[in-house]
Length: 54
Image (tube, rainbow, N blue to C red; front, side):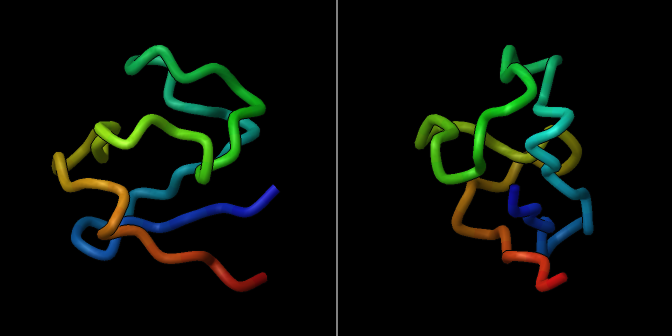
């Protein structure tokens, strides 16, 4: 699955891990995160994330 990096603080959303503190279980693609989900480190929205090209 694709990983995305926060352009503000460089935190990486990895779907293999999810975001357990926000109730996002592993296996959820970034595209399927709720529209109101925010970066757990700096609080910016999904629009401030970029795809990590690997």
